[in-house]
Amino acid sequence: MLQSKLFPKTKKEAPKGAESVNHKLLVRAGYIDQLMAGSWTLLPLGWRVVTKINQIIREEMNATGAQEILMPLMHPKEIWQETGRWDSAKEIMYQLKDSRKKDLGLGFTHEEIVLDLIRKHIRSYQDLPLALYHFSTKFRNEARARSGILRGREFMMKDLYSMHATEEDFWKYYEKVKKAYSRVFQRLGFNFKIVEAAGGVFTDNNTHEFQVISEGGEDTIYICDNCDWAQNREIFEGKVDDKCPKCGIGKIKEEKSIEVGNIFPFGTYYSERMKVYFTDEKGGLKPMWFGSYGIGSTRAMGAWVEVSHDDKGIIWSKAISPYEAHLLELNNEKTEKRKNFTESVYKKLENVGIEILWDDRDVSAGEKFADADLIGIPIRLVVSDKTSDRLEWKLRKENKSEVISVEEAINRLKT
Ligand code: ATP
Ligand code: MG
Image (cartoon, rainbow, N blue to C red):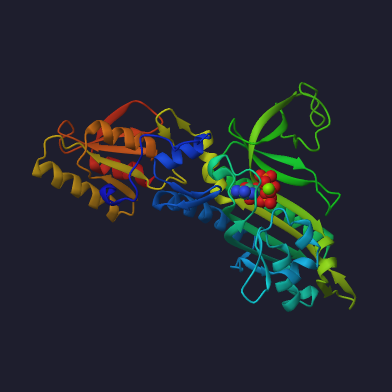
């Protein structure tokens, strides 16, 4: 991609009133744009990042045997009334009437909608288990929509739903998803904790939150400094510096964190209310075991920026960077030869499938360096009079650079 064509241009100043790091940096670097409180356009760079996050999630969901679908976002009132959530979730759900006076809700989650789908199509234990997921915009009338893209009133979520004939089969899959989520967050490069949280009205069991430890987080969690024990504020009953109830060795610490994922064992709560029954091997009618599992992919992008930046800008990991390398030509004095060389480097990299952002703009070297640091692509390649027919190779997270051949750069980028 030619940077001169990239929409929009970077900004020197953070937007007025922006408090959080992700808000300031993602707006300045041209990843997101705010329409109104809690509502964001994902610009070309931002959409590339979220697309990469989604692809990692998709691969890990598919690996659990789940199948991808796409569900509607506008829902009829009647289905939400079956579980009582039309009323109990009024504060969070946008509810409206269309011109025919029909009551509609905008999807803030999809348990009821997926269960309606299931009861139309599944009758027998032989059709179970089944796991379906989709990526879609969720609408939530959040009271506070601060924290940049971490808390939107519209945001992107992957939600997965699983249906099972037996409790045992359900828990097996729940653990499988827990592992799949761990792999997702490992691949994204996060330092995260699996945190026990309250089950709410649906279940006596705890749910599990995936929390990224970050100063910029809105959540507070308690973790053991020795083992993997972690609880959220709602259910934590001890105090800081207590001995860990699990390993008995570590001490309990308090951390700020960002919830990036959550998994819920609902048991038969929803299926009983919505009459989602199947016939078992003996011909008896039974409610399905049901779980739901969410990851906020736009929040994950914001969370990454919160934990990986410096005073100059964002620092992406290879896994989710919008481009693999940022090519800068320093053209204080324009020469045809150097321009041709840069173009040949760009083409060679493109030809071997490396995603590259080429800063071909007619601006000073200082501006190019500052923008490269702000945008945060992990590898910077510089062509200048000093490098001759070679390239300067520099990692965003390090200060030192070295001059290497084009072939060497390609080899390094391919591995
Ligand atoms: P929170 O406690 O932060 O409001 P939640 O418990 O309401 O989150 P879930 O309903 O479990 O969230 O949604 C699943 C995932 O969707 C969350 O783990 C988070 O990553 C993301 N998410 C939830 N609300 C928002 C939001 N307003 N903006 C962006 N992402 C969100
Ligand atoms: Mg919420």
